[in-house]
Length: 461
Image 1 (tube, rainbow, N blue to C red):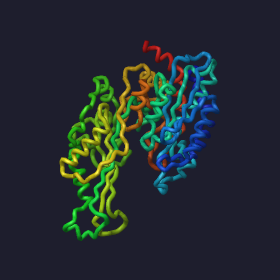
Image 2: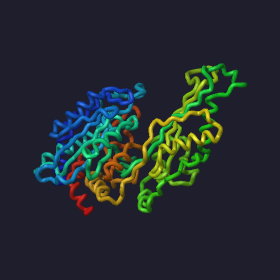
Image 3: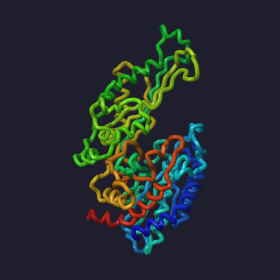
Image 4: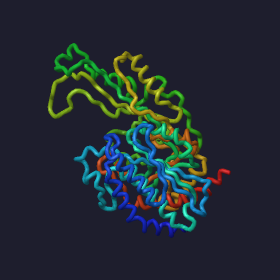
């Protein structure tokens, strides 16, 4: 189909797609709270089958079901080529409710934006992709290639049970390339895409000093669990934000010169970032003398995500806490192993005299980076240029994490992530939204991407 014809079909399809997305968003599919899983799975199956796709609901290997979807190439398509989409049907908890301006599970359109939990992450992307398929089915000869979907229900809790499904059903999900679940526009309205993802070692550190909270006066002779945990944490990272854990950087695969060049050319607006988040202190890369772009893509991190101990309510309560707990999130780069990171941190604590502090892994995933020279990577970028007004941005990997490594290792395919989000979509926060214009453009991008997919892969020969 010609460009103007595609854009016309997309515009015609938009009202129906928005209504379908609204219905999907009304399911409060919070995996962390085990809510609405069967109902959402049934609706995902219905959306695929309503437009002629085949489905299988895969279960029995632990966790929430995984939905498999399949659309065969049309009579004039290339059935030897298959594009896989990875999406998830679960969403983050909506709390705190009082910070929402609308009901989180009652989709509301205001000033061109659709507000609801899951609109950007990740329900909007799935509906955009299914709408693109529906549009291409109208073309003479039907779909230009086979299309598969893997839609899981535990991404928001770290995909703890996904790998067994990938291994068990490796042949079912076999494909030539994969479009990942997320992406969106930056503060300068450039669509951002990535060809990889960072890994993660998310841990819980616990210090227990007594069976009960005590009057703070006994702090004259009783050790304080909160202070002890803070002191332990302080040994792992200095004031220059350098990670001090021995072995933490073991195994890191250095980026290629091409990857370094791409990252050096990525846009980065420090003033815009400062305004977006309301930052009160300078970027930590300033003191370290590093480029924020290098840090986002190539450097591992260690972040305290939460601290809990003692009394934190209104007013004063003079207690010496019986225990203290911290959540620590390490984002990893290719070559790092989350189990090794856990062992290094435990050994570090032991070496510094904190043998009483327990460390438990909550979520461990390895990083993944696609071959930046694969024709599919260029195809995603080139088809984005047909739709988006500003030059697209494609980075070697995102700063965030997902189960991409398991896909890449098992299925041996290039992966690029792109989606319908925007810089203000507030993923994981109250008032999550997508803009209808971005949703429309995301549909159009998928139409062009699928249309030339087989030809792009033929360039590998």
